Length: 398
Image (tube, rainbow, N blue to C red; front, side, top):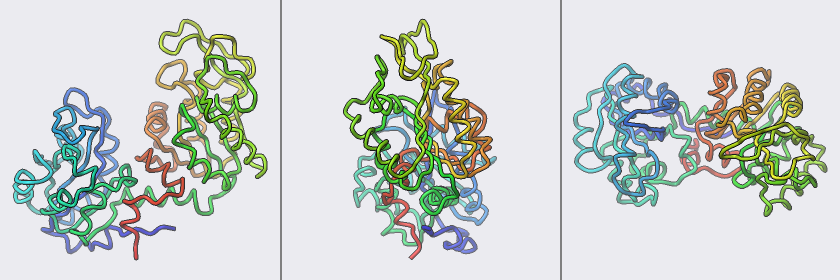
């Protein structure tokens, strides 16, 4: 299993008065100057509390949205600083820039155990381009580095890898270590049966993950728009439903490979269909091989929900990524909610990843009952695809 440099390797007892650059993932949804979902802030609290208790002086840095290298008030992290202060129950300063005079002044004003959140890294093109000059400027006010941003670990950006030559005293935060350990369990010797529940609109983006997981699986359950392509590959006419016609060959090959390996594959046997995605006037449940003309599939049906839930109940290790229907539009969220409840009742080790999947689990009120809820959708898929994540590789113990 991958072992990362941890806070113990930094020697917390020696951090009093030391300025530490902490890469967090505060890429949170904002509306009218407020954070509308503080999950990622809450996930960062254990690391921040340990470091402040040790007397370190914390310079927090993060990106937010896609400002494309320009200052845009819409993506300011100031609301995140305000909400973080509420969560910590202590002041959190805010610097108007992540480099230059504003950052230097903010760093100089810190006392032992104080925190400042630096303005959005992506206000500078140098962040995503990993420009050495920007990385040096970002690291200039710190003496040590902690990365707790798993959601960005698959990006070789300045704040993830570029600062490391300037800050050799480095470690992974508690969240990053927890993420890597949980996901590594799926790639090691998972307790069996090992099941994967994959949904979402498309196969694209999940191909490498699916191909890497497939040899390890006992069960593969496919729902959502993704299932339409698999059903079409199996010979069903999905009529007006979303089908990735260019992926039909791939879907068929995956089904054949699973059959050869003795992997049980569950596809929907019934579907909830509607006449319109944007403005539905009617919906009904039909057999997967009997979708009426002009109708499109928007959720798995009740028989499929029951079969999927039973399969989930048998699993001892399970990974779920992607909703099983148009979960943001009731009543087409029934399938996703039913499976979220099934995962919560599953006695095995359950892992979910992906923004929509996590949102669905939280909406269903079951997120706290799952084994591990990953904060990084893209990063978790790339990790499970067997790819090296730059942010993880940089912090592996020698």
